Amino acid sequence: MIESLLIEKSYFSNKNDEHNLADIIKSINLSRKTNLDIAQMVQTHSNNIENVNTKGMFISDGIITSKENISLVVRTADCMPVLIKSENSIAALHVGWRGIENKIFQLAIQKLGRESLKVSIGPHAQSCCYEVQKDVGELFSNNIIEKNNKLYLNLANDIRNYCRLNNIEIEVSTICTICSKDFWSYRENKTKERQYSLIWI
Image 1 (cartoon, helix red, strand yellow):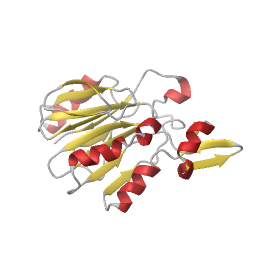
Image 2: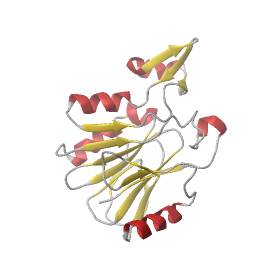
Image 3: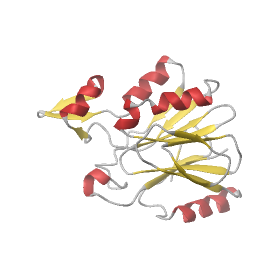
Image 4: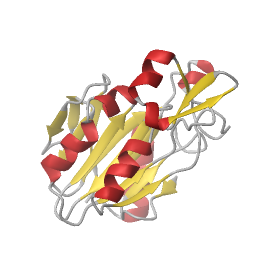
């Protein structure tokens, strides 16, 4: 598990960790002497964000809570896991290019408020490998790198720039899930496996 350097009680898993979410939570509960419940998402690349107060499965690509002992979980295999902490609440977002286009991050910030915000983006497809077609490239022309007549997207750049402009603390992983052998990548081999990213209060 990779621990966020910016946000306490937040982690990003990799291939070397347990593949079963329940086992990951069990391990955290034992090591941290906690009793976490799990709130996770049926992710559809939407910009829907749900406020949650209980464990369960929510049809959304973002979940927010102010309740203690609920671990918010996002599953990824190239998209960005984005974990956010404000003074009193936390959020977990599943963000791909559609989420960026539909401003899911900004919507989450509106719901959380701007006070004492910290943002941690975990391992995801990076511009070294994240090839996109012309239609997607045109949507994000400021975040595109062209190499050998191919277009590659810097997926985190919009969120990073937003945070810098609004004085929000942010850390962004430089690990690429496509070319790193330690992470699951759908683009690499159509895997059904996923990384888990977790945050709790």
